[in-house]
Length: 131
Image (tube, rainbow, N blue to C red):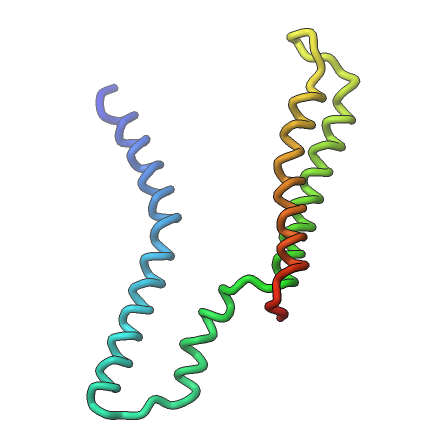
């Protein structure tokens, strides 16, 4: 019973790190290789085709926040907060083993996504970038 549990825990955490870090590492490596290729072409005096420039700037423009994205995130977050609050009111009549009901803590928890949703909706209304 020596190293087997430690080995299993190591494998689980390594898999989690690989799933989280792996895609971003591969994307950054691909971006770095593309920039190196473009740099070599510019150093040799070649002109870049407009299609290549459009393809390189598309990722940058896609990542910018827009009005519809902000409002969509806000509505989804607001809906999840309302769902948690509805769940709190539904189970509020049942008592827990500690003698109280779970309504108060769940309503407090529901305030977090509601506040985030309201903030995203306000940001979406003031965001000048339209899709």
